[in-house]
Length: 359
Ligand code: F6P
Image (cartoon, rainbow, N blue to C red; front, side):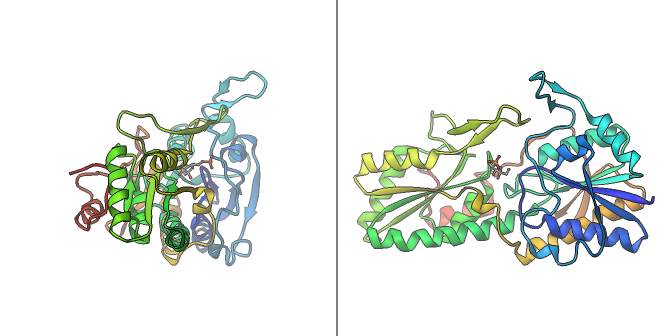
């Protein structure tokens, strides 16, 4: 093997650059060249690359985002055609363009959608290895995924800022976190920041019970209430709150707005002044934590080694503190929190943190 390609795709997060650096440096140690595919599957299909050397990746691990660029809409086998408005399979075209560059293997860093496409690329003949990344932490191949720890830290810092203003004004603050249908980010960040109420997509909340708890806390003399809510959480019998549908995206739903809805309901039903804050893309940005730098490097190194050893077709992830490989799954099912069994859910409940429904 003389040359490998690296691609990052899906929503960006912190720790991606560390993975890129580790792949480049590991390949370099084995005398293998590397190129980067730019902007995720756009660059794969269009054939856009940049050279990657030990010099170009120096110190990149301390920067957030991805030096290669990313996109979370495109899928190579369901690629939007602007002219027809339909979708085409452009997998073979992308592989052909890579082969024309002398590329003999590829490492793809991405979420479940991205790695599902990586599986298809592998099945179409390009030796491929996947690395899981997402602030949502919703992939069974790695616990945690690259980016999760940094997103927790960003969200915790933001929630702590809300606490001081909530205290001053005797207010209820509803803070909305990302994560799509998985509640990991909301649970971990909400818990670490001292939220009183945590509402997760894995378990619908009861509005009346939430309002009762708000009233209890305010009457206890605490002056403020912090409610952390996942963007895809919903009331019992209610619907998810969708901010927009992105037409040319493989996964079209973009969540957003549940915090405003809930804040208005709480203010109306309890009479307490309530404000909503959507943390949004703040959670994806910024420099990686040391854990994400190390995780990115370990998984990048393991992925490069699998390719170099001629052992593609796997996703490398962290499981129980050890780097492990699993075959590309055939389906793209997100890993959700087990609301009843998850240890942190149990701890939170035991400490009196309200998770949206009376026990
Ligand atoms: O999957 C990562 C993620 O940040 C989700 O938590 C969020 O719902 C989504 O991406 C946001 O997507 P976009 O960047 O397209 O708004």
